[in-house]
Image 1 (cartoon, rainbow, N blue to C red):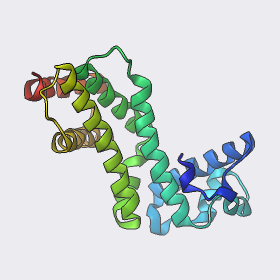
Image 2 (image 1 turned 120 degrees about the horizontal axis):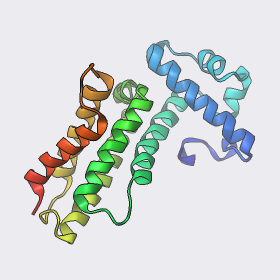
Image 3 (image 1 turned 45 degrees about the vertical axis):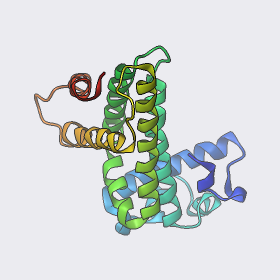
Length: 203
């Protein structure tokens, strides 16, 4: 989680504090996913986290504050999942396949991300916009590197990055959140999306 989401005097300075913060964020994810922002409560978050109500205010000033931190934390988690799955030796197309597979895996493990990010559009529009702009910028950088290496056509930019991001988000919605028996697995989905990408922008 970005330390920008917590004021300097609330940033945990010990391992115990960081563990407590993690408990609060994980509990908030469940509380917001189960009840939605308006019905969720600080007391519900602390009960789920197994910490005292006063402990909450050691880290956050309000329900809005922990919601903003949670959106930031989830956005960072998406980026981290992709980075950890990638290898410096991968080609541009392989990078996109593996990044999508990593996102689908992350979404399967954190299904609450869809409800929370969608709610952020209304609860905290700045966090909502930052989430997608950050991911879009990462994809745009990858597409440009692919163009420089000759694997993708040159001149790809934000429109192509956002189109690719939209495809990835809706594949996650259909095959993770709305998963049905008999659906292809995440690896197969990533392969088929990658084939579409290759036909569309490979040089």
